Amino acid sequence: MLSSHFAKLTEGERIQAINSLIELPDEIELLSLRHLGPAIGRLRSRHLLNLLAAEALAAATALEADVFLSAPSPKLEGALVAEGRRWTRLP
Image 1 (cartoon, rainbow, N blue to C red):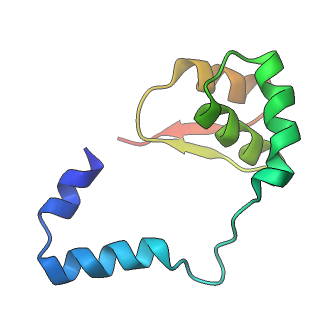
Image 2 (image 1 turned 90 degrees about the vertical axis):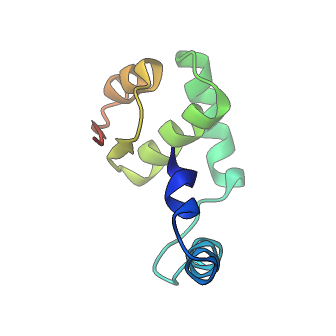
């Protein structure tokens, strides 16, 4: 579980790690759901995905990006392939 890594940190390290997630560097951009919303709707009509998976698929499609998965997600994996996106499951 990802949170177990945070539990191993000292309090100062944990605060620094959380702050680095909250305050993203300028080179990291976030896509607006206003932009992704229509694509999420279209993709959900083609693929039986939950909202989080549909958002990931829509973002990958919009950015023409590969997707890295930390856990198996057969429905998302199949949808990514169907939409021409590559994916990799991390060990």
